[in-house]
Each structure stands twice: as C-alpha cells, then as structure tokens.
Image 1 (tube, protein in one colour):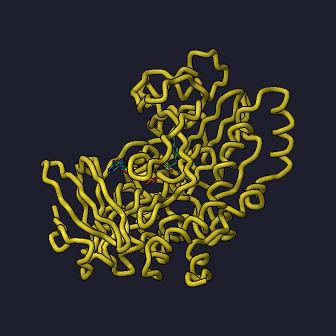
Image 2: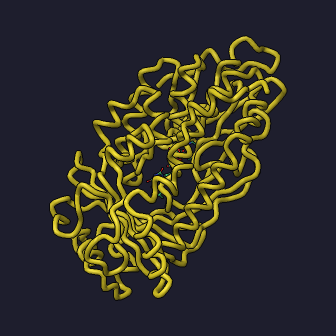
Length: 419
Ligand SMILES: Cc1cc2nc3c(=O)[nH]c(=O)nc-3n(C[C@H](O)[C@H](O)[C@H](O)COP(=O)(O)OP(=O)(O)OC[C@H]3O[C@@H](n4cnc5c(N)ncnc54)[C@H](O)[C@@H]3O)c2cc1C
C-alpha cells in the first residue's frame, strides 16, 4: 500500500507540498468519482477507507443520464456499457394488476432525449470500474482499513492525523479534506459536529433472484415497478450476473441503531399480500434477503473551512427517485473544478454548497413524495393510476426533465468561479 511520505508531518508554516493534496474519507461512489475528477486537475488525492477492500454491500443501482454524463467524461463509458444494462422501459404494475398500467420508455428513447443512457448496474461492478480507473492514476492513493481520522483546519489548509489498520499513526497536511464517508459520516458527525442520520421509518428488503425463475412474471428486458398499499418494489435484471435485483420498500418499526441484517422473510411476506407477482418473488428468493434500514441525513453545514462533505455524507435521501448515487456523482463533478479554480478551498466549498443545495433538496423532496404516491391505498390509488396512465409512456420525460436534463459539466463550465 502506498504511503504519502512526501506529505508526512509538516507544520502549518511549511507550505510547499500540500496545496495540491486533497484527502477524501470514503472509497465509495462519491469518493472515487471525486478522486477521478480531481486527478484530471493534477491534484494528489489520498483516499482513507475504513473497510479492508472496496466494499460491495448492496446490489443494484439505476444510473440516470445526469450522472452518466460525468462517468462518460471520466472515460468510463465503455466500462459502463460492458457492466451496465439499458432496460428498455419501466413497467408500472399497480397492486394486483396483471399487465403494466403503463411502460415508461427508457432505452434508445431516453438516451436520444437526454443525450446519455439510463442504465442499471450492480453496485460491485460500479465500484470495480471506479476503483480500476483510480488505479490508473498514480496521483490517487488508497489507504484501506483506516481506523480513525481527526483533523484541524487552519488558515492554510488542514492538518490531518489518521490511524492505519496496523496501528501506525500518520500526521500530514492537505489543501482540503472531503468527507465522502456515507450516511453515517464521521466527518459530518464528529469533525463538523453535525447531526446523526435519522431512520426514515422505512426499510428496503433486498435480494437477488436467478433470472430463470422470473420469466413468467416479469419482462426481463424491462425494469418493473410494483405499487401497493403501504409498499412498493422494484425489479431489474443484471444480465452479466444472470440475476434480477429486487428491492422491496415498506414501513417498519426499528431502533435507530439497527444495521443491515440477513433475514429469511420480509415482514411484508407475512402480511397476507395477495399479489401473485410478489408471491412469486418471495418463493424465488428462497429466504435470502437483506434488510436495510433507510436513513436520511441532512445538514445545513456542508463544509467548515476547507473540510467539506459530499454524497450521502451531506444529503442521504430515500432511494425512491433512484438519485442518491447520481447526486453523489454530480457533487464530485461540480466540486473538483471549483477546487481547481480556487486557491482557497474554503471559498470553493462555499460555492459548491451554493451551487448544489437547492437542487439536492428538490431531489430529496421528490423522492419522499414518490413514496407517498407509490404506497397509496384504495381509493386514492385509482386517481393516481388515472393520472399516470394519462401521462403516457413519455410522461416521465416531462416530469423528470429537470433531473435528467442537468449536465453537471455544462453547469460548471458556465459558472464563473470568480464571480
Ligand atoms: C435500497 C437502495 C437502493 C438505491 N438505489 C439507488 C439507485 O438506483 N440510484 C441511485 O443513484 N442511488 C441509489 N441509492 C442511493 C445510493 O446507494 C447512495 O446514495 C450512494 O451509495 C451514496 O454514495 P456515497 O459514496 O456518498 O456513500 P457510500 O456508497 O455509502 O460510500 C461511503 C464510503 O465511505 C466509507 N466509510 C464510512 N465511514 C468511514 C470512515 N469513518 N472512514 C473511512 N471510510 C468510511 C464506507 O465504507 C464507504 O466505502 C440506493 C440506496 C438504497 C439504500
């Protein structure tokens, strides 16, 4: 593992090495995308990750055009095409419907409209391709198994201490420190004294089912979105792994410190659900589910001086608009050029928050509203279905254009960092 020898212990007065060094906590989607975006600007990037290898927890992700622009710009288009899959449509099945109420067009139609593909990808594949891309840059270094970190900001940057898996403690300095350490971010809670994550009251039950078991129930070229009273579920294929990713969302009482658990049956399965499609999913899953508490994180302070937050660390949201990772990727694309354009990291992070906060808050609100719509009980669900059906197969092109049309690279190229 690399050691940032040239950056070891130097006092705040010694300023000749650190201005182009940025530390990032978290080798997740936000952290690795930011590292790649910064590498283009010749920064030296050091990623501190608490796990002992790139983590592959979780299963599928939908990656929409707004995020894909960024990944393509980082040279990942071919890898995304190789590992991802462009489902042709989202079939919406209200509770007990045999056929989709509507099939929202994806595939070529969405790519033509928003100038980038909409794909699904296994999280491990996305992590793998980001990690491989990072390894191509000798100005990106990783430390895995990092036990703790602490830091102090001062006028000329940040003094950082971190403890490696071996117990060795390193003292170093940097231009900025960015917490991309997820929903339970230590940077947000411990370094910036920000709020803890809050349990949303909902869980996601997740499983992977062999593709061969769902041929009769789902169109395996499409994403399927199932709506029901008090729950919804999403299913899409990962053809490269011969599995279908299933996530099932519903309310559940849990203590705030509950972590991801292996469970044999989602609570919903015991609630006399009559939907044949869901029943088929429960049978095919063969009791292999993971229960994920869905936590949200909100803080008004996205940075203090040169110590900042991006991704879930700044704004973890319900995954009901499939935009958490997309927002993390957008964050990275906006923050990197701001850090490059400014001598002062504090000023760059302040501009970053101004540029990002409204958009992210709107996405957070949209995701929460989706939950209410998807989970509607009868008779409200009748009105919902009439509206969605009337919007037609391209209704989402109009309704969600503000999300998908956004290209962070265009946004930042039009932004005058010195304004
Ligand atoms: C069920 C579900 C489905 C989802 N579906 C989608 C979807 O379809 N599309 C989408 O865009 N988003 C989706 N999301 C949201 C998405 O997963 C997150 O928004 C995204 O992973 C956030 O990325 P991140 O890098 O900020 O955080 P994370 O992916 O959580 O990465 C944080 C990293 O920091 C590390 N870390 C944590 N603490 C420390 C520490 N103290 N020191 C060092 N390292 C640390 C972690 O080990 C991890 O590697 C979904 C979420 C869920 C729960």
